[in-house]
Image (cartoon, rainbow, N blue to C red; front, side, top):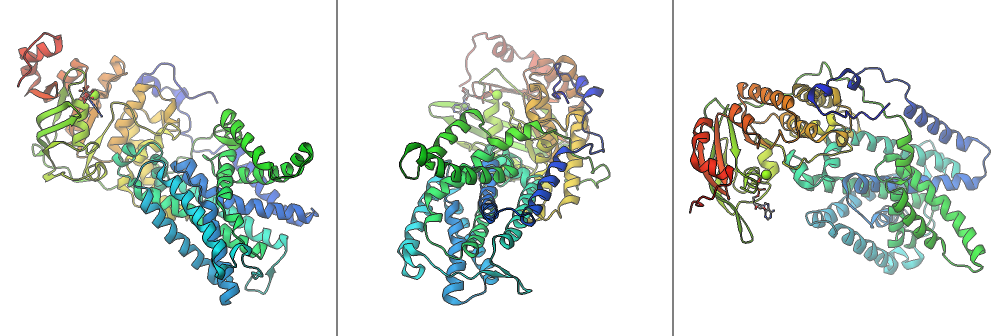
Length: 621
Ligand code: ADP
Ligand code: MG
C-alpha cells in the first residue's frame, strides 16, 4: 500500500477512486492478528514444554514488569505524563497483602481489593494535587512519593524495616490448588497480563481513549472538544497505579517475601525505561520493553563484571547507554519499529446502519445566538481587542474581517473561552458565559476551528472528527475496556463519517490526519466542529490553503449549513468568498470594530478601503 497522500490537494482528488482505501468491509489477510495469535499460542505452550525452571521464572518476572510498564504506556506514551513513582505503587500492592496476610491472617483474595482501593486513593490524591499544574509537577511529585514510601517502609517496625516481611503465604485457588511453583504462577500472571493489555487496547480505541490521546495534543484542543482533561489525566493515572499495584500483589505472593528495595525510586526509573525502550506509544511496547530489560539485565549482570574485571552493578551504566542510543535512533521504542513494518489495515466499517445521535434543538431563526459587548483583551502593553461589540443571529453567516493583527483570532479566543477577557460581556444562547471555561462553552454548542490547525496527527481523520462528537457520547473507560460501548461507538463513527462526507473527505477517513495537506486539515477541522452538532460555528480562516474550486465547494457547504439553521462566524481573508457568502460583515482594525454592515455597505465604506489598501487614516479614538 502506497502512502495515502495525494500530491494535489483538491477536494476532487480527495474523492478519487484510488484514495477510496479502507472503506471495504473485508478485513483482508490480517498479519497483525495472526502474529498476536501465534504469540499467545507460544506463551501458552511455554510452561508445558520441558524448558528449565529458570526460563519460567524469567517469564513470570517479565509478566509482572510488563503489567507496570503497561500503565506507563498509558500515562506516558498516550497521555504524556511522566511518572517515576510506579514502583512505589507496586510497593503499596505488595506490602498491603504481605502485611495483612502475615500479621492479620487475611486471605490474599481479600487483600487484593484492599490493595487496589488503597492504591486508587493514593493515586487519586497525588493526581488531584499535581495534575492541575503544568508539566513537571507530576514527575517531581512521583519522585517525592517514591522516596518517601521507600524510607517509610524501611523505618516502620510493623513492616520489618529494611528486612521486610517474610513468609508471605502462597496463593491458593478455590479448588485447593496452591500456586507455589513457577509454572503455576506463570499460568496466573500471563493470562492477567494479556487480559490487561487487551483491555488497554480496547480503551485506546474508544471515546474515552480518544479523549486520553487528545490530551497529549495540548489542553486547548481537548477542552475545545468537550474533554475534561484534568479528569482524563487523573483517571489514566489511577488506572496505571492500579496495574502497578496488581503487579505488586502478585509479586508478594510469588516471591513470598517483600522488602523495600524493589519499590525504590531507581526501580521506578527502570519501569519508565522499559516503557520507553519497548515503545511507550503501543500496548505491546510494554511487553517488549519488560522482556528486553529483564533479559538485558541478566546478560549485563554477568557480562560486564567479567569484562571489566571487577564486580558491581554495572548494568545500570549499560542501561544508561542503551537508553541514550534508543532515544537517538529509535525515539518511539522497539515496538514502533516493528509496528511500522506490519501492514496497516483500515478499521472495519461496521456503523453504516447505526442510529443517528440525538441532535440539539436549534434556536429559532433570527434569535440572537451570540452577543458580545465591550469585549477587551490586553496583552501586557498591547490592547489586542478594544471594546468590541458583535452579535450573530440564528441562521446567519457573519464575516469578521480585518488586516493581519487586527485582533480577529484573539476575539475568537475570547468568545470561545480559550482566553479570559480583560473586560466585557459575552452571552451565548441567552445566557452569559462569564466564568465558563472553553469546555463548558463548547458543551453549550459553540464549535470552532483554529487558525493554526490543531489535531492529533497520528490518529486517523475519522478518529479526529469523532473526537469532535465527544460530548455527544457517554461511555467511559470501564465501558470501553469491557467492550460494552460499541453501540454508542458506532453512532459516533457514523456521525464522524457523515460530517466528513459532507465536506467531501469521505475517501480519506482512514488516513492519519498528519498526512493530509494543509487545506484538507482545515476541512477536517470543520467536519470535527460539525460533529459536535453546534449552534454556532466559528471558523478561523477556513479557506487558507484551499484552491479556487475547493473554496467554492466550501462556500456551498457553509450556505447549506446556514439554510439548515446553523449560525456561522467566519474569519476569512478571501474577499470574494466573504462578500458572496456573508449576510453581514464586521470589520476590525487595530483591535477596534471599524464597522458592521452588509457586504455592499462594507465595500462602499472609505474607512474599510483605507484599512485594506494601507492608506493612512486616523485610528478611531
Ligand atoms: P488577527 O487574527 O486579526 O490577525 P490576532 O488576534 O492574532 O490578529 O492578534 C492581534 C494582536 O494581538 C497582534 O498584534 C498579536 O501580535 C497580538 N497577540 C495575539 N495573541 C497574543 C498573545 N498570546 N500574547 C501577546 N500578544 C498577542
Ligand atoms: Mg488570526
